[in-house]
Image (cartoon, rainbow, N blue to C red; front, side, top):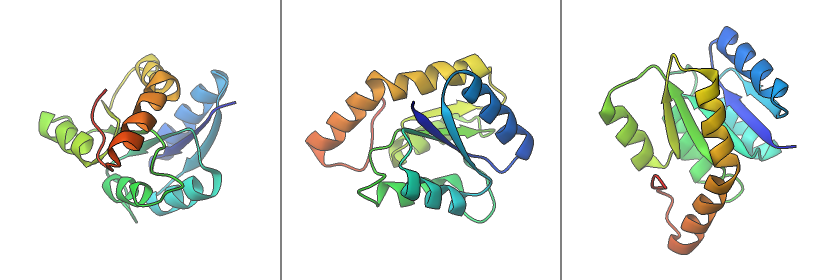
Length: 141
């Protein structure tokens, strides 16, 4: 069973996404702030991280940076979930190392398809890309 780490400060969104992914057969770990999310990622090494950008304690960019700095977590596929909808926000997130970016509000099915891609062939492509280049910056594959 694949594990998804959801990092989201909005309790309602965190609860809804958790229930949705569990109904789809995934194990879900939730964190209400970035610091807790980094700790959980390090402890449990999930198969995918879906992370809000704007959060207290530690924002999504800081979470991504922390995960990319650790050998244990650097290859975990990472999706930003955010209300920031400018094209520049998406480009910045992908340049910094996120694998994907979805704008709130979104259809649950859209996030599911994105998650399934990164849990499947996307994850393998990303790991191979990082192994070949040694780069901590990902590209959209």
